[in-house]
Image 1 (cartoon, rainbow, N blue to C red):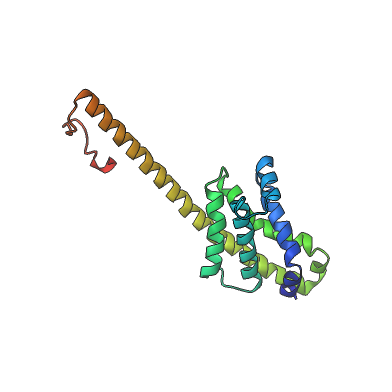
Image 2: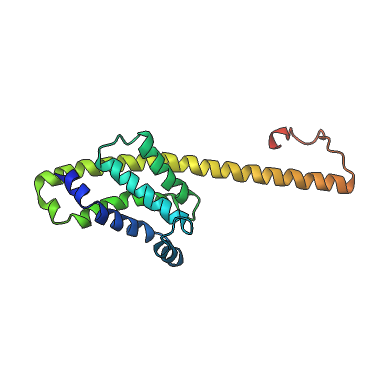
Length: 184
């Protein structure tokens, strides 16, 4: 029954979910994301909308949470939010916002006991999706920090090389320095 209602009200739930997600952005960004519908002028907004729809379809069709298609949509959304100025909880909040979107859209239909039981099952799947998204978020953040570390290391090495050239220093490790080969 609930899955039928979710399919029937898909557009309304998705619209509400998308609006909730946009509310997590600063006002200027939110205004831009709402106003630009063109995929090429607003690739972030298009990716968010695509990702939300893919996750919604997977959840309502009973797709395994860890399936390749669910992970692909989730990864797309998590990558966007991992590189933005969000705390981890803010970055992953979008998943839990689906619960609110469903409850607000289907408020009257959820009064039935059978539908309420199904809602608990769907919400449990959403919670499992949140756990998977946390793993993906941590992987993205680790990759970002790794990239930053390499950039700093490379920049430091280039600066050291310029200093050595400028002052005629040979780049031979002295005995007082620890083995810095791991830094290069």
